[in-house]
Length: 446
Image (cartoon, rainbow, N blue to C red):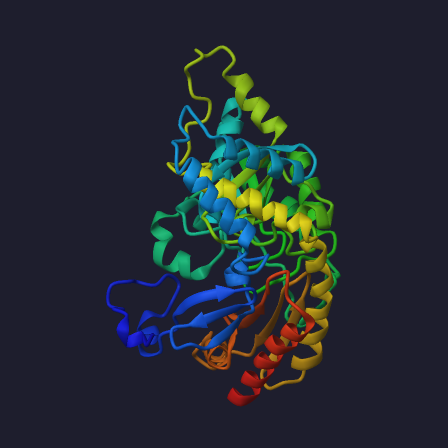
């Protein structure tokens, strides 16, 4: 199939320079294992798990068969006032994997919806316990929590604030970003050690400014994924937990990227030994084959909401929120099959092992190349940061992305970073292919 056979004047591509794409279309028509097939018959290795989603690799028969069987059994049912068996089973499995008493699962369809859901839970919980004045949220600079207005508000993406700032939530503040480009330009499978306590500003500056009694929640990505894979300082997440506990503030981890194996554990919460009050998930939970997201809450939050309505009539709704497709039976069937596959093939542990291979390859092959100013590897993901072209931020990385694609490797450009986050089934030779494609592109365009 030639791309001329496709009508391209109707789809508006998301997060894509559409004018550029029209001149150089990149269209996939099939996928299997680690590779895509393009519209013109080429093989492209998936170096980013198709945006952090496809942990088990493409076209996995057990997931496909579970979806087909579910479609033949129960294709869809509403989630309002009734539910379906697969949703209960998926919630049970996810709760069993989540740390501590994170046992209550609210399903939605994406990471964006999960972030907004978690924020609404925080507001409703505080109101239910008689502290409705807690309505300030603390995010972090360069944080990404999806495209809903809540997620954009707590996120720290300048492009969102530039275009949508007038409609963002007003009672929001942001922590400093977690990267020192001079002292921690090169991070190799370790947590950076800072001379200062980077979380201290939460207690010493932000909370005194707003009064901690007004703050509902702090929300952060354990590792800043969308910004370009930035690793938190050693002890940073534990300090956030301590400060939130001290002041009665909820702590939310956005684990849409780190959840389900990327760091070699079920969740980043497990890896860092820090339990949040809520964590959000999506992406890898279904291996990317069907939209599903959610929020896992502690028993304390759920029980508090139920207790606040104990004197209300039985027909009263405790949490006025949900989505048409919450707990979709086909999505939950896909999740159950995906989680089975992760367990049977021990893919979380494999991700941890292959992460070391990826980190070694990135630092060995890319350090010292033209315009390389930083390399960060942690878990099964790594990024190389390039010096921006004067007056054209992001262009150098975009050009490298295009060059890699045309040489058979899909990488992710994020600002002036190029990110690799392959499926957990990746082999050493495939990592070498991906890193080699990056190195060659950087040198060709240097």
